[in-house]
Image (cartoon, rainbow, N blue to C red):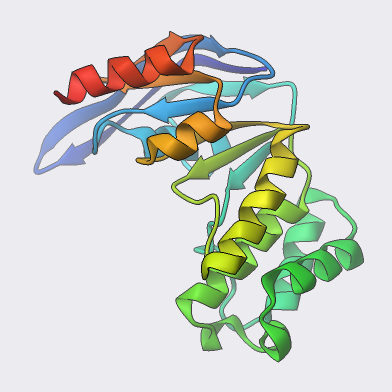
Length: 217
């Protein structure tokens, strides 16, 4: 269960306050993988960051009775002076999982060889993405937050990444932001449409997609 209790968020732009998320009191459907749909700039990534706890709302709070991931594949919080392995151990301690098990999983999954033990500042963007996605998939969460990232790398690695992600979705739920309706249909069974700061809940994913496309028309 994830519940929004009077959640709101806005930003000051050129001396004008722009409300992005209007006050929300809403309980999201439990045990469902939810697409979060809306036009560019609607506030989808902002809402995901609030759910993840990496961005404070202006008012209210998010309440959950299960564990919620950081945004899958997010590499912005890596310490660039530490190695990939050291960053993995830090995240393991942060989330209370076995450090050795997570290191072994990520090292095998990311396939970056000796770079795994080199400073992250020496990594290419692709290597950082592999490391970040591996960490995300290596920690069991009740709900995964996905912002345009279900796989990374070349075709073979993307296939491997999607297989691991599908396996996680068999026992967990997700809130997914994606411009790919193919991915939305593949992984989600219900939808949230964010429009003018408010959320519409659709129990049927096709109804959510139809509403989203009508708003874009």
